[in-house]
Image (cartoon, rainbow, N blue to C red):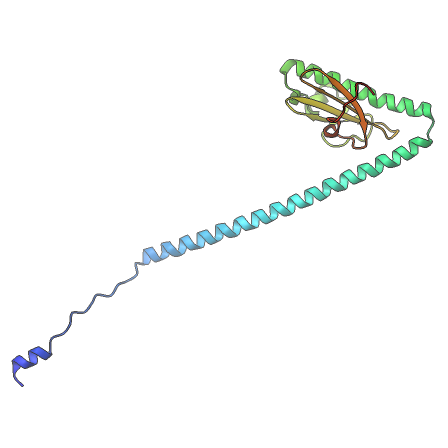
Length: 195
């Protein structure tokens, strides 16, 4: 075979260069994937715990309402057997606390034009002889208050088992009522002109 013929057969195709994966790009892609996965897991964890906490809080609030309702019903049963004169004195004490709270709230409102400035903390500073709370009232010295910018209400539990409501708005109209749920929030539903 001639040298020329050999050259023909010895022609070698060019070698295609191999593609190499860039290590930096690979690390970046893996890191981004791990970060997305971790964020997703964290979000799932947080949402799950928030839902569980909300469910526990709702159950606890319902339990407190049920206990308060049972206590009110027990007091009402006892008061039905009590002396009417004693009941009247006990009821007067609760109504007096509610009126005093309303007077204090009106004074605080006059200075700011907002009922939210007459909440439990502000009323406690103004009248330390009463206990102002945003939870349920349990006695004539514990006043449950609900104060928003446009309205204010209070509820006071009498030992006779009657809860007295008093509420007002920016227009100055005062409403009264009684109810089984003894909270300032419930007292917002007061609709009578007097007790």
